[in-house]
Structures are given as C-alpha cells and as structure tokens.
Length: 398
Image (cartoon, helix red, strand yellow):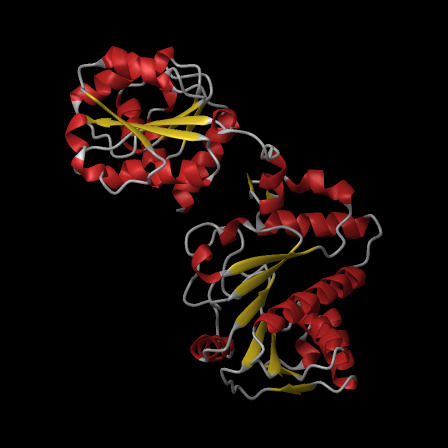
C-alpha cells in the first residue's frame, strides 16, 4: 500500500474532482466507511453507550457528521461537540451538520466526557499544520484525559500528516480510520505514538489517479505479505521447508542470537542452525529445543564457511561484537556465499567502516543510527539515487 504525504493526497483528490468526481460523493462514501469502522469497534467494546463527534469547521468535521447520520440510522445514541459556529464552517460540513440535526442528533458547545463514551475525532484533517489553538486546546486536553476511547478520522488532530511533527499537543487515538492512503506522518517522528491501530476506508478515489501518487514509501500489509508467502504443502518435511543459518551472538549477548533464531522457527523454517562462539555454550542452555547449535573457534574460518554454504538463507550480525577477529571472519566468508543473506547489527557496523563483498541477495536491516552511518559511506555503496534520497529523508525525519 502506498504511503503518501498529506500534500500528495490533497493533489490526488483535486485531480479526481477536475475529472468530474464529486467532493460531496467522496464525503458520503468516507462517512459510510467510517460509520462501519465505528460499528466494528463498538462490537468489540460493548460497554460503550454513547458516541460523541468532535467536529471542526472543515471537511474533516463534515466526514464526522456523515458518519453520525449513518450511526443514528443504525440506532446508536450520537451527539456532537461543535465549538465553531456553523456559519464559519465549510459548506459540506454545514450541510451535513444540519442533516445530522434533522435526524435527531444534538450539537453542543459543552465539553463533557465519560469513560463509557466513544469519541470520534473530526477536528482537523491532513491539511493541518502548526499548533493547536484555543478553543480546541481545551477540548483535546479533556478528550485525552477522559479515558474514553478515541477514533480519529483520517489523522489524529494536531499531527502533521507529512512530517509526523506535533507542535504542542494532539489527539491520542486508539484507532485512526485512514481515508484512502496512509500518510507519511503516521510513521515518522511522533506520529506512531498517537495514531493507534490503523483502519483503512476506500472513499472512492478513481484508480486512474493512484499512479500519480508519487508514493514516498510502501506499507507492507498482511494481505500483501500473504500473497508473497509460499503455499503450505501439508505433507512436506523439514528439508523442504527451508534451511536457515545464523552467524550471531557472543558471550555477553546470547539473546541477540536467540531472537532471530526463534523468529526463523516461528516463521516456518524447516531447520534453523545457529553458529556461535565456542565460549558461549552455557549461555544457550535455555535455547529452543528445535534449534541446532554448532560452536566455532574464531580462527576456524574454513569450518564456518563450509557450514554457511549449506544454508538456503543466512542472518549475520546480531550480537557478534566488533572485534578484529570477527571482522576478519566476515570478510573471509561472506564474499563466497550464494544464499540470501540478512546483514544486521554488528555486521552492518563493520561493513560501514570498510565495505567488503557481499552475497548478491543481501538485505540490510539498519536502525536509524546505522542508516546514518551507511549514508555517510554511500560512496562505497551501489545504491539508486532515489533510494538514497528517501533513506536520507527517513533519517532527518526521525
């Protein structure tokens, strides 16, 4: 799934409207999808007895009112807090607020919450920048302090949809009902702390505008990953289910070797084999029963290489340490491997200091600090310029 900046999403919507699509129809479809997401949330939280819409003066508030209309028709108790006069609201917000009132919904300026309510954040959309001002500061503070669950429409109010910045305060959502595309700000800086769980609603953007999205990143969803996994053959045996080998760990960091080993087992690998320093034997006493373990001596490069060449996939680096013998071991073994290889942690650090040849199918898994070190040595790496720009953007944003 494409991840777009707030500006890119806005441009897509404008492009669609120029093609003849209706903003009113978009809002109607969005509101319907939001209402269904709210129904689903309430089914999981049966103690909720009332829904409160927190509505701003823009189209985010209009989305909330459309959802409120559907929820009233479903038989829920729904009211709204609208701090701005409807005369100051966008036309679509005003139109759907009046529709909400005609269906029996109540609109008030009184801020009062209890923990058995469900709050729907429709205050500010993805176009918000800057700092929350009164009268919304008090409303957001009280909503966050209420202990009532909060669902945000498209984005938690107060969060910058492109950068993930929060200047002052923002809604802390239990769930964000994302319209169309996830926004880059969800995953950068402070964004991930306030978006909660992500739910996605299709509000009718035409397929022919998707390619114009200029996606900054791609979000790996369960449905996408599921299609990449091999089909399970029920009568297969362990030798047919993949042979993973790890070169990881040291006496002071045995857990760093055990975590990826256990992950490989849980992911369905038929065999997982860990190569570990011979002085680490006692630290592995509580390792999973299924894990094959072979000690090695730092000077026995040939033995390590022979073992690694048996595997279909390899992970290298977690907890290895940064000593000269380890550096020599990696430089001696990795250039001669053909298996898929994941390079992580200490192996990445050693590679960054002085790069060496790697297997053709190698994946780097750096955290932000390791990424910055890699970029500083980018002249040694064969990387697409656009990838480098995106990697640099991640580092700056985080």
